[in-house]
Image 1 (cartoon, helix red, strand yellow):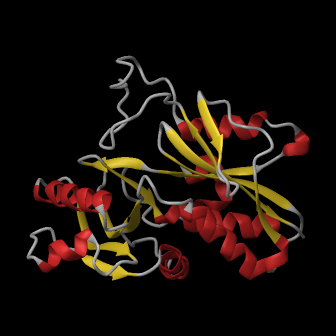
Image 2 (cartoon, helix red, strand yellow; image 1 turned 180 degrees about the horizontal axis):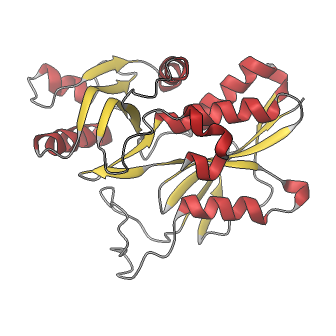
Length: 269
């Protein structure tokens, strides 16, 4: 995915390049949020591990509430064990993703993030903060898209994030986005990662966006979707490489096959 979207110069930044696409062995899996969604993902991951469908070295749930549902369940003796990190999500991303970028080893198992359906665009926020550290606070801006994506449903958020979806219906939280859509009963002929590439290539030269930097939340086991940490770290390096000597604008998108949160990151040089 990274080599196809970002170019061959970033291929060497990937960890675990010898792993096959079906390898479900992980170093650290982090679940964002310890409420109803996080509790569900935690249960499903443990079911998958007991069935031999997935393995991990550490399983972490991040929530700023020390009394979140996951923490309370663990206190009551739940069998679905994990580490609970009491932290703001942005603070956790700063620490964990920064450490991942400093510890790139070809033989390391990949780390992954299980996002919440209701979380803000945390990956974009982290990339924005990283760019400000490198280029200065006044040099980096998050701006709204000038051209909306051509998806059946799309809306601009108040913070500059643009939301897009191929669904005009309400999807169940446990949908794994199969090739046969459970809502339409027909072939799912769309995929948001591909659509982001088409979107960028369709923009006029005056609206050019680099990338797209796409973080694909794909379903790995028992209905749990994950984003690979390597992709986010590689995107940070891509922004640094392309914004060091000139002004650059990037499309940053966290997507599944059907839905996505899009952001336009601008670095002035």
